[in-house]
Image (cartoon, rainbow, N blue to C red; front, side):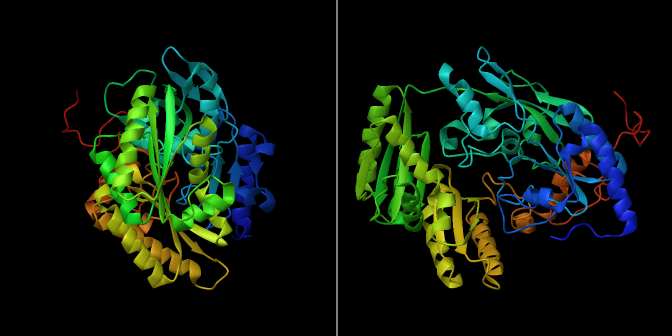
Length: 495
């Protein structure tokens, strides 16, 4: 966490960059002193910290374009940052790079009810979109636990989900279009307000690209009408296995809840102590199942899910009767991460996805690993789609404990891949999972992904050091570039 070295040549270059960036955004929006930059030294994965060389805070797409053109011409690395809630180190700064913060691009530009969409800047908080359209009976479906602060642009970069993604999808399923600035300053648009765009799915390529292809400056999101009725069922179970069995029964019976979340005993107690959500403290696991739609349909599904829960050995059942009670059930689940701070000085949030049928097995093996490493693990997860969020509890002040946590975390994620799952569900790869990519992808797979990176960012200036465990130069990958409108091989036909 040292400031940039005091080498005269480097200091001169840094001062020149400060002046040039100040000409674009105003010197008040270029942060160069240690105190101001301390805020940006880490993201939500606070186990890793690094001071940036500089922080720049543009307020318009034109300013973002000018900053990127300047950095591209000078070969300066750029790390985009939204609200800093990333949980995989995706916004971790570089000591020799500029952190480009998007917090000033924070306006809702247009709400188009006729086309059921909203056009927002990337710094708009996720929850702010739903709040802006609530009076008209609409909402924005993706709802990460950090939705009160996480930004829409960051959600696009990580393809974030949330507790209602089982029925309504991840960010990619609720996205219509984006405006993005390339490393050379060019402004491009992918998608629009239509249901689907012709041609290659460039919107799909960019969504979840973790700021490595370009910087998003405008997002068009899909708005949904609020369902007539939404009710949540809270069920307690005597074991993780019985709770997991209930999840399988619900999905197996063709029921697709709006949300289907599970928490184990440590997480239950932490959340209940934190926000008094009314969770049963005698349960080893709880399941929150939300059903929405017409009242007659919701009533029938509540009855059906209750029967399935009882058949799986539920020790308690409670159904929300008011909107406040429903929100209280979810408050406990969405407060699980901060609540963990009540039972340990530090926690490390994992993110892996597994087939639902392997849920009980994986939870058992995580418990065994927890005992092996003598590190408590609280499990909170999107049970309906198999997206696990084990919280490894530890004390960073104990020498060597963080290293143990990292080793345990790597084993948990490797287990997810071994049972047929993937390394991440919604938090991204960042630096946390970068060195685990070969457990899931072959060398050829990774090279193919890097070819996409090269097509957008041939000099690897955008968020370098993330996702790829081994960096290949674009020339080594055989990346073809068009130079002044001419292809490098004259024998290739032109069309």
